[in-house]
Image (cartoon, rainbow, N blue to C red):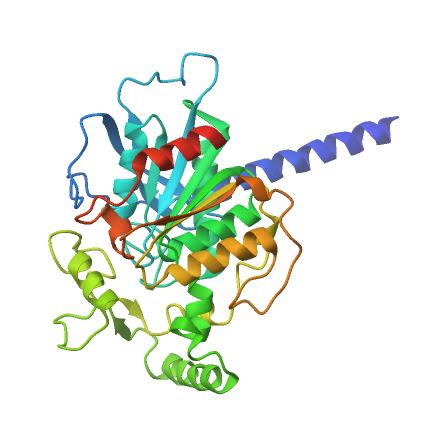
Length: 372
């Protein structure tokens, strides 16, 4: 009996040390960020919401900066009916910051009754991570899941009613996160890119051949030794005379007062040449046909990127689609998947609505209200 008691005490002691170590590790993960407190978004603050800056940690030891938008007049502990409010985490476009499109989406959802979080991804904007302008399928998917962790612990949020919105390149990341994390109950992929597909195959799969990928890999290997911090450049400025319309559309958003922001990679010097290398050798939408929760893929009719959204939607529902060389089983829950093509809209029109006010805010809110 005495030996059993001693063994039990030793086990409790080890457990206590483990808990203490875990707490210390969590505390050590936190990093002090120098957050701007002034309103420096590219859109005005709505008088229908409350706003505050927040931070949260990822499992990779990075601290992310975010803007939290809450419906003005909402109760501090939820809806007053015994449960918390539904919540949405938002990020994107790829290379952009929370002061741009993602913040606008979050604020518009807060106006419609949701707690909404727009965050800067790892290595981007006000979030931590060195060297800057780095991206990874794993790290960026974790960014979304860490945002769900944060929202789940807010007193006025119902952890069973959390959704996400991914814009542009973060639309594909959002689908990957939804496939990985069943806590995400509803997902909107807006004007999405599949960053792994375009990085490995080029636009419209024009370089989908081993020779092209091998040449790119060799160039990346040399770049890593020559200058791993070299930048690849952001949105082209000034514009040459002859460029595709979508390049003009990017310029009209990122290089004008409409969307320019000093911390945005797309507005400024872009990415490190090797900063997105991991995307070219991954195909991260393999399991989206197993997403059981609700998904809305939203794309502009005239978007150059429309083929990404349509292919992702069809693979998600049917387990096969043009442009994907993997085949899976049809989705077990196809009825809660939607593809919305917005007439007349281009890719960047779904960043902020464009001149035609193309973003159907009420439709997006109704989708989340129905599925959260």
